[in-house]
Length: 540
Image (cartoon, rainbow, N blue to C red; front, top):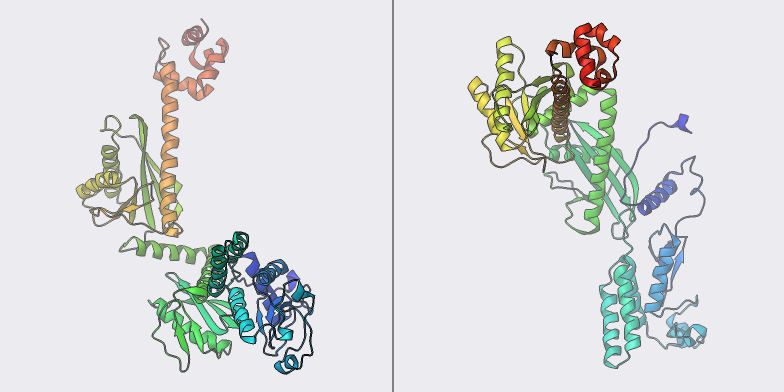
């Protein structure tokens, strides 16, 4: 089967239940060769209100075009049976298949059956219940099946209060339980809904390079066609322009004659004899949201493919997105990120990491040891490091970054800006700070931070630059702290200077191995005199 696949399409729904319903509809419509499970006459059940006098209400798997009403289908039989049982507990409806035409009842052809005697039926066959009263119950039942419980709830509440006023509290409690079961039960879904008959639905999402349009064709309350496409942007087309273009093309492609189109936002387009509707609430709103969800999922899949097949295009799209979100004059092809690391001011280091085209350029990473700062002062450290970094780039004529990212809030950002102003680079390079608590982006001289969508690729790249600067800085801070601890212990040995310490560490790598070394090994490294001093210091 895999070798015969031509293309693979997916349609996203809200639940597994909805997926089963949609699968049934598509298999019945297209009769695929490999789907044998649902190709026969079997299908999901419907609740039928029969088109007859004193209508019966029952479960069926066969739809007959005789004017009867069908609700569903139900992916599982149990919820449908529970709903029918609830209805029968609330309302006494007939279960027999007699022809209860008024003339037949008037002739007295029928007699009440056991259902009447056990109080499950009011006996319309003997004219013991009027057609008006029966039709009123059917209307309430129709509302319950559709999910509208207002009429049924009102009817039950009146009965509950009447029982309670007559001190029949047990019956009132039973009615109250029925009301609670009605409130907890609402069989509604968007894949198949009898309230949406013959409409086209469009949803879309877009980015800097393309728009992604999803189309649902809904007939008789079911999705019978799902189609998603990508439309490239040539100029600076708006979402409205792209949707108008796609709407006309897709309707023509599928020969749609629907008189109603559901869309996510208003368009200037007018189609003769067709209504363009932007739903605000209800089932129609939910089906538009589902269409938009499909468009977003399609976009994500496309981006994954592009990232693998055409990485240059993927990079260009991200750079264009970053330029727009950060209000930059150029794309941030070269980004540099800074972070400080120290413990109470000891062994301080500052890390500078470089990203080119959104990827780390580790050969360009740099570590700075502050020279003018005493104690734990992040602001002064950032000011010194930024000045030293870009003073050197200017002196050597190297390329400057388009974006500088500072790990911290407004304080660290302001310190970095001071150095850029001294170098005459402020305004020529975009500089921002990123705070960790809410991932807000700070701009110089702007008290209100920018909040970027947590799923946006721009934020993910900024976070990666920040995290890489932190990792690189912490790594070198730990190395420096470890070396400092080692050297301080070896410096306590009388008569052993820095050169001898460096020689021992280069050969034996650690203080532990120096302590465990025998006199012969130490003599080979330092000579007899100093070897004896070191060995005696650790072994006396």
